[in-house]
Amino acid sequence: MDKFECINLFCVVARLNSFTAAANELNVTQSAVSKKIAWLEHKLGFNLFERSARKIKLTDAGKSYLAFCVQLVEQINVTEQTLKGEQTKVSGKLKISAPSAFATHMLSQPVSEFLNQHPEVQLEVSVNDQQVDLYKDDVDIALRAAHLPDSGLKAKKLLDHELCYFAAPHYLEQNGYPSTPGDLAHHQCITYSLGRPSNVWFIDQQKHTVLEFLKSDCPEFIVQMALLGCGIAGMPKWMVQNKLNEGALVELFADCEKANLPMYAVYKNAHYIPFKNSCFCRLFITIL
Image (cartoon, helix red, strand yellow):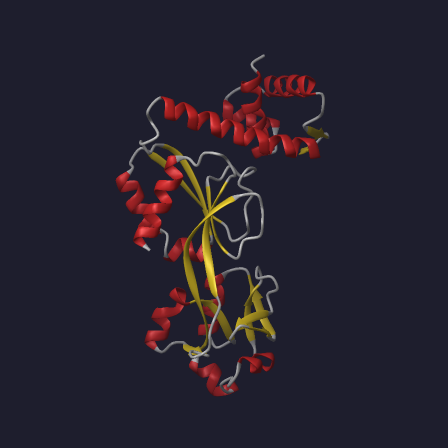
């Protein structure tokens, strides 16, 4: 058998977590998939998957081998493109993962311009506030608004989000204005549940533990609940600037120093960054 073909197949099975799903995607039989994975395991001398009647699961060795295989396949593809003189042509599939609110409010213009400039790209935008696994979910670029831990991935900083804290006028009329960030411990606060920790806000370079009255993993829901007077919330300012201008929301601690939340484009760790990835990021930075 062709070992590289089996490696490609292994990457697909690992991404879909299913022999059957891989067979359907590649239009081959499930038995052919099983035979090729078994052959690859025999050649390697270790199991890539733990198998049961209902599911398969990567072994620890399989996880390590998958990271190597994904980089290998990507490097071979990029090298072939370079040798063919296609490195200056933007084409093929590009899958982007982005947070929900950012995708809704800020991503459409860069995506539209990118597709206008590069009509041969087949673009997929996956909206997910949870951090995706770039290898398992076959994502080319993940947009992440966070201070990144050392994950072994590559990242390019795109912009800084200016955070602000706000509440509806009728909430403040009924509950009073917090005069200092320390007062947030006694106010109803609407927090972002994916924050780590969700009940700590950074204002004036200090940590402030707030009273969690309501929390959610949906930024737009948090803004809506603040508009309804349910409490004080904090989000990137671009999400609520119009509501602040209209007077539907009131910005709090305007003179205090707030933390900026950086946004990065995160890539798989490979020696070569595909040209389509770098083209998208350059356009993104130019527009925003």
